[in-house]
Amino acid sequence: MSNDPLHGKTLKTIVEQLVDFYGFDTLAELININCFKENPSVNSSLKFLRKTDWARKKVEELYVRTLPKLKE
Image 1 (cartoon, rainbow, N blue to C red):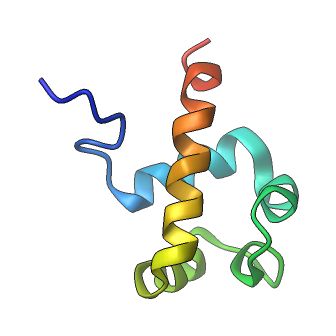
Image 2 (image 1 turned 180 degrees about the vertical axis):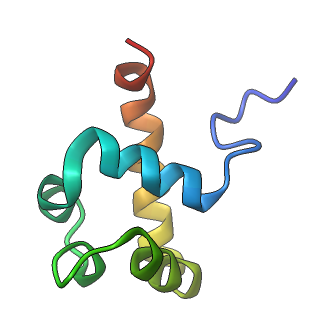
């Protein structure tokens, strides 16, 4: 078994879970990227994050920090 909390998680799943948990407004405060601020949607965010490594890394790091709260 992998100890990597991202193992087997698609970017879509990660973004959807973060949006469900925080909402786009809070996500935009936590990670300052336009795809969470300007007409945010899961699909537009995915498009941006798939092209932008540094932003995807920030989203993945937030997801890992949020995981314990998601499991409550």
